[in-house]
Length: 162
Image (cartoon, rainbow, N blue to C red):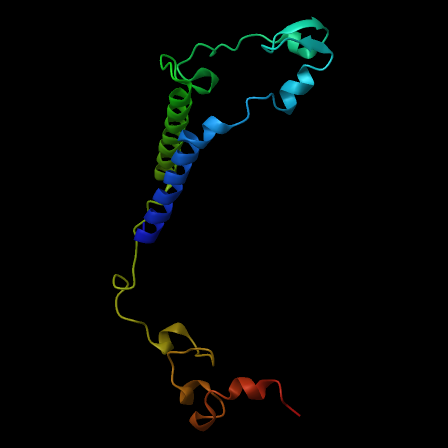
């Protein structure tokens, strides 16, 4: 990978880490559209618990991974909420980056890389077929039907026949 690509990749990783580690702490704690729609028809107390009525949220059950180390956008065992949320975001970005990078590494092309130096000497015009007027490496006498005196003006003459 070229140096410029590595810089772009590391810059993107740094921005993602900053967003996940710091900015994620300022996300809204109010319920999103899905949560709000599931609570329609119910009465809810200040803690967000359903106290009455009838709504789909009453059938909600705990997830099997509710006790996992990264449940509820935090790290279990870290008491500081700001630090817990930031660390879980950073850990999530790093795990995602490692998984994505590993998948790209596994699926990369494994054929031999060739460069101009490895291909040997440049081929001649005879090996490549007939020359065209658009070949910047060929001389004007070989490619321009008007000859070397009119080289460079062939494009201006193309549309002015008549």
